[in-house]
Length: 291
Image (cartoon, rainbow, N blue to C red; front, side):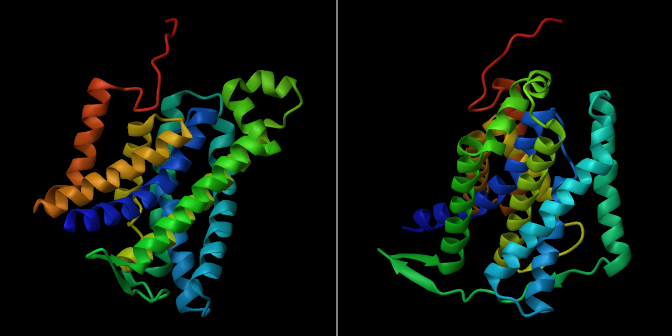
């Protein structure tokens, strides 16, 4: 029965990676940019949730919604200030800008609040349920449940709303979408807003799950979420979800087998293997390009 418990814990952790990975894959799917500052949006979400709960006395769900709203605005500002003028620049210029922006956000936060970690307040009562001999924490169930709801909501937005149809049109052919009257700038900003809001939610979940946050916390989860996006197929929304869940389960299994020091390395071993044997990812398809 212990393996079932480890599986549930892995899926809960994987749902956090999936929420972050969705931001990577949505942005890449539209403007072919790897937004390496996305991990810092995740970090900002964790701190907004922390101050909302510890400083302003808000409950978990109000703090979660506030973190998502602040991160959505932050994501739009990042796109507007840092990336919009680089839309027609070389890939390497946009990539270097993303890395530089990531470092800038980290050290601005350190400048204003210091580098010391914070203990996340107990926003949720953590009860343990015995289900057929398996001990399952209420936090794991809640994190997984809310993450699934957010992913379903994202699918609804992408496939059933006007802005979602615009996103798919811009992703398919930006110039044709512009000629059809779609406001490309607004659509890209909306994509950054939605992806950043999901990263903000993941930051709050991470703080509740691991109980400790600090300004450099976005580096490793951000890179792992990027691995999850590549694993599922970069630019493919269901792929990011599945990739995040797979990565979380693999990490948990590695730790359960007694190799906890290798749990971070496992993600990058997966990245190397997927790039060697299936570069397009689980859901991706190989596409021919004229050179």
